[in-house]
Image (tube, rainbow, N blue to C red; front, side, top):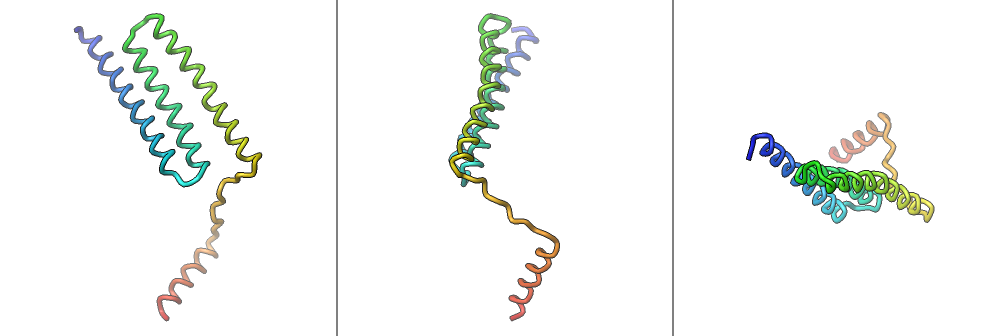
Length: 124
């Protein structure tokens, strides 16, 4: 095996392993995150990143062939349909009444009041 072929082989396997890692992390995120919106974010971001890395790794394995072209077409199709389907699911959830959780609005005054309350409780 020549040096350029060895470098391409190592690079392709590194991308395949990295893509698999992203997909596994996304699956864990879907199982572990508490609400729909967090799970949707984990699924969409890791699906896109993992898919791109896996397809590039596979294309590097095949070389300049018709298979690499097909993998490129699949990648373009997935890059268009993945975010579109995520947006459609999020829009359907919003229309059905599922709202994202609101973060507590904090101001310096609220933080100071909360700290003062904690100090008073500790003194009693």
